[in-house]
Length: 443
Image 1 (cartoon, one colour):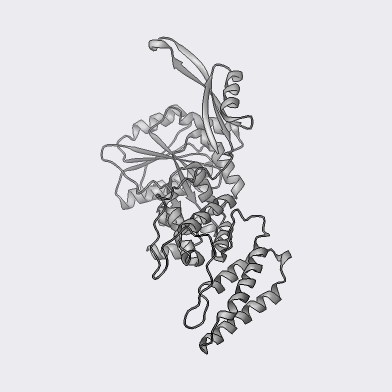
Image 2 (cartoon, rainbow, N blue to C red; image 1 turned 180 degrees about the horizontal axis):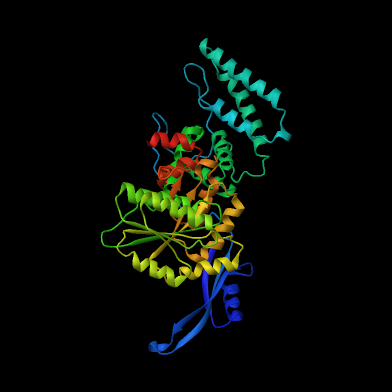
């Protein structure tokens, strides 16, 4: 999604500018009046500022890795280094007669053949018998060459059946690549993005590696790492107050995330922390924050308007970190969004982190990001990673927005279930590594 701000004297003038630059399909996200000084600083003029957005014609344009920027893949032993061949290699067999990677590839492709185009039991039975035959013949030292034609015929059949799926966004006959594409789609990554990632692997890997599902996934994992931006470890400077505000829709875990970060800084880093809440809509939210603050012996203040927010910030200038909680806003509630924007007007020293739940479905996730863009969030925070197994939609939005990720939450425990985002961690999640397995390894 492409988002841009326009300034004009009238709405008509602004709409004409938007139409010329962004096309007739652009839509308005937000409007507000701004005041600027005249020439040489004398006088003031009022302008209309409009934030407009339009869907990119090709959502994959933002994924722009050149060949030199792609991670170099180590050459496989005794394999040709040429990576530009397009001809499918002849199947190879090892000394024991097992066909290298082909059984795995067949199984993976077969699992994604549309059900209405296959008779699963007979074909599955033939595959099982064929693999057993290869295994038995290999043990006896027999020549397996005569089986190659039959293997290739079966392979072509599976390819033709799998390609009937309308979601294939690239042209290949390689079973490992097709299987990897479907795996990425199952994990929630957008069709076109999954296709482009697989195309990169096909172009860069040699013949043996791109016929190995594990090697393809490892290579794509490296691509993901290169395209993920993260904020890094939290840095607090002496004699300088850092301010972070969490915004987002209702129910995504803003208050709990804030409490986790406050506990980490106060109890583990021994830093002075203050809490400010703008959430006066829910009494329970204020009580929850006050409970956390009392346990951690951290001051907390309620700000009802911009003036009180500035007063609270001024009062806590001796703190290393000020964390600001906000009321959950529906992206469709324009009045509520405008109220929230007033708190952060001309407050450039406040970092705004948009909190997104990993459980939010794809279309809603894109809408939330578009609506909250008017607040100019600098970072994304991903919550509720423990409540789903599919994270690919988050990656799709990272590619489209190029926003860095600051924090991850992996459970309800305070402060244990808070992680600083790392590109390697997110890459593994997007590829399907279970959350518990990933953090067991990290620990």
